[in-house]
Amino acid sequence: MSVHHLMLFVHVSSVVVWIGGMAFAYFCLRPAAVALPPPQRLTLWAGVLSRFFQQVWIVIVLILASGFSMLFETGYARAPLPWNLMQGTGIVMVAVFVSIWAGPWRALQISVAAEDWARGAKALNRIRQRVAFNLALGALTIAIATLGQAWR
Image (cartoon, rainbow, N blue to C red; front, side):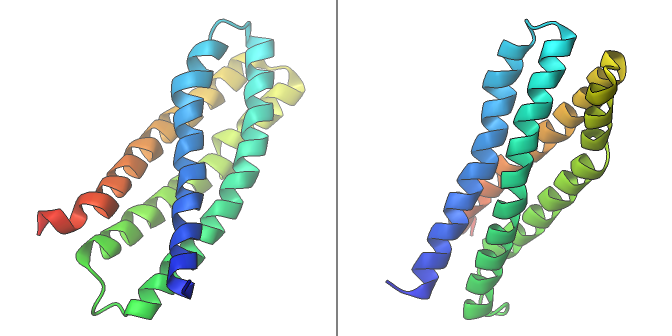
């Protein structure tokens, strides 16, 4: 096994955690949580997102480290175009996550602690919108990774 294969495993596994977590939250947890009253729903989301966001920070580091490792090994000049496109979409995804972390996630935590359910619902909706965008961008990134060479 080469370092490249190890980095590819780390990269793909980390992407699965991030994209899979967003897909689960958006398509499974969200529809089920809608039936809960606001105090329970927002408290649930605050707990789930707290754990998930800790994982996202870890996988972001792993994705960037493994991706840049493989890119540096190959060299920017020889890297296939899809790799550069993945780098671009990945950096946008990180920026969107940081915007969630610094903005509506903080507002959700404060709102739940203060039992301000109306403000918490607004913050959760902003998180939902950004997660939907990141999930779509993640799907595009996976398409680029798997189908990119076929578009040549």
